Amino acid sequence: MKIGIFFPNWIGDAVMALPFLDQCRKEHEKDKIIAIVRKWVSPIFESNPLIDQLFTIETNEDNSFAGATKVGKRLKNFDFDKIYILTRSMRSAYIAWLSNAKERIGYSGELRSLFLTDPYSQYSLRIHRSRYYLNLINKELFDISERSIYLRKSEISNAKRNLDVLDLKSPIAIFPGSVAASRQLPKSLLHRIVELGLNANNDIILMGGKQEIAIADELVTEFKSKYIKSVCGNLTLRETIALIHLCSGAIGADSGLGHIAANLGLPMLSLFGAGDPEKTAPIGNVTDIVSEKVYCSPCNKNFCHNKMDPLLCLYSMSPEKIWNSYLELLKKINN
Image (cartoon, rainbow, N blue to C red; front, side):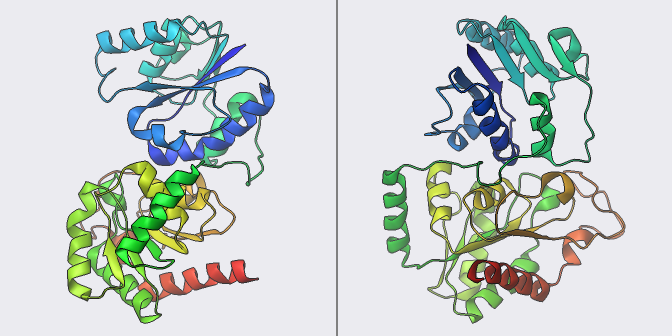
């Protein structure tokens, strides 16, 4: 059989879908699994032995009706027996329908049932996102160790060379940013967290995309220390993943990089404001979250709507509490 999995569009969601991939492989041990992914999340799935083939949708390739139709017709060449659609958009269901897969399994809503052979009613959105995906193969529980992003030895070797060039040893990774503005950490909060880390004789590495370059450069300039460096905007996602793998732990916003760090087994402390940790907390053996649960959170908005107290959920956080929570995480490893 040929099995397609239409994976989510965002890095964090894609990582939270890895338990589904593990379980799906167990269900289809001898079948061919094709992962259908968007270009910007494809690095999450590279080198994964559970996947037989990656089908990549280029950026903006399916933004139009004609583009989505073209992608669907390309998928038709695989002659799928079954496609699982983890996304909730009408577009993904339409593309899967055009593939002519014999079984098309996904959640209903937005008239998606028209394109599905096996529409599932919307499962409780209060459950964790990983369990939400697993419900499509009638699973709820999973082995927390079976959720891995895979790295090649050459990628790890290159990451070690990058750390040598930066002159950092087992640094703490700090992830200041997020796709959503409501989840990006305030500069004042980041400054104090970095200060506490440096005062405790830790090397610090700031990681993120181009949108985090400015705030990371400001922090590096303010501290004037050789023990803090930024690689924001300088690395590919695969290079970033390999570098995270070599860090001693991580503290960061509710973001894709936080999910990656937890997946790789790092002590990961995630700072939740607008997001709901019950649904999207990173999955890992050594993880924790800080959330102040103010009156307006979790709002799940991409932009703060609180005009009276903007970003109260993040500004209410105590850097000292965050740092102490991180130290408690490290104790779990040592014990």
